[in-house]
Image (tube, rainbow, N blue to C red; front, side):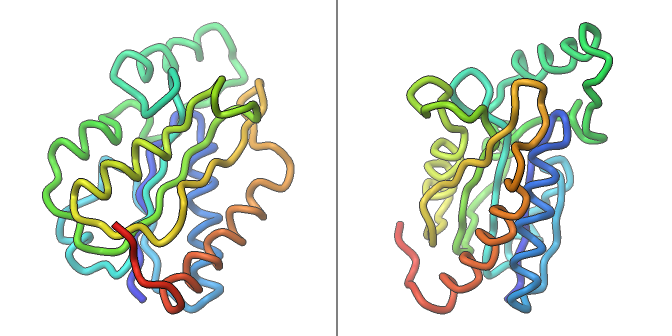
Length: 179
């Protein structure tokens, strides 16, 4: 199974979750490529059986140019914040606006604070909606992985992401895609 995991990450947490999901998929013998959204090309999508897309939750949904700029500027106030190497590019909204059909089956994830979704929002729902609009059949409900107020992954989230990757691999063989 050829899989592409595409992520947008500001402080590296979503990147770490993307790598953990890929690890779970590899545990199930999937061939996995993990790429930042800035490197996600249509030819990758055309060759994929499964596309997994994730990003951070900003202002109750997917990031925008303004929320990404604010995240970059937050680094000036907190020297412990380290930007992901690909943080200062375009995000998932811009990628979805530029990409054509995504013919593969798909899954969506996000990172957000560990609070009720009614308070934080969930980028994964918007990601899933856009994947369906681009022709993907979703194989799982959108998933959230949690970060602390200090912008570190909550304990066990990488393990939970790896397990979710295994679940996605099993879903590819067990469950037909839903639109």
